[in-house]
Length: 290
Image 1: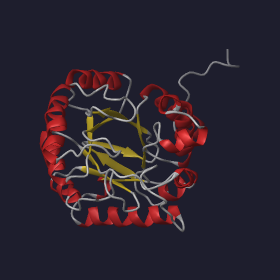
Image 2 (image 1 turned 120 degrees about the vertical axis):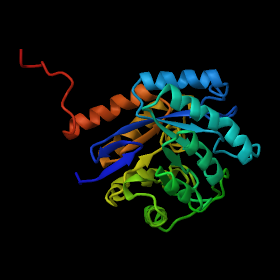
Image 3 (image 1 turned 30 degrees about the vertical axis):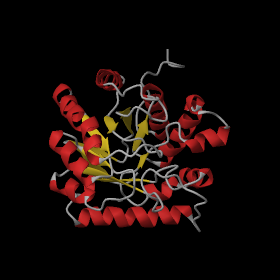
Image 4 (image 1 turned 90 degrees about the vertical axis):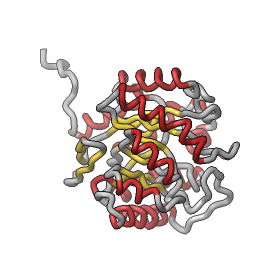
């Protein structure tokens, strides 16, 4: 593998790293858990659970991605800023990410102790990366095909979806570096389902090695997505096996960060891929040796 190194918070990782980013939604209407972590204590319990399960990063979101009630910046801050500050106090070494596209929210959560700004909407607010640079924070750049935040794609077309992903993400990453984000703190994400139909997301998965070859750390957010559900004709609550299959393929192609709902199962898949790839030794070897 390449000599890639990247930094999140105070920690350094390399090309063999396969990190689990656990999702904690501070919303009453999330597509997967239907608001299970909307109440603050439930959200804290979820953080404690995923940390105990071995999550490397926790990603906090204050607005669901799907269309719905308009949530202004002040309401979004109210959902995430104090929560991030409390998380930082309770878990001083935890890598904390916040899923937001707004620079004003990004500034507030970085002041509260977050390490990563996860911009799921492809630079919709161009000042977000400038805020990341100011705080020496990491930033996740995503490909959305230019769609407006919190809208679904409608008959979106690409001559070559991976070419579009590469062009957009290289431009976003280069701009982030140009405004002062250290190169080793820029992460790229093809953003499955965002600005894409199922065929596009499947092709992005199939060709993920092309994205990895660019030399930036790659994040994938596959967990229970519609492209998995449509591929297998399964509802949200029955997509784990399909998600894990896509996770294994992405890991074999070299992706580095996996944004997920199910930490334990994902960790096992990633560790198994790492062992097969020779990046980790088996945890125990006795067969045929005793």
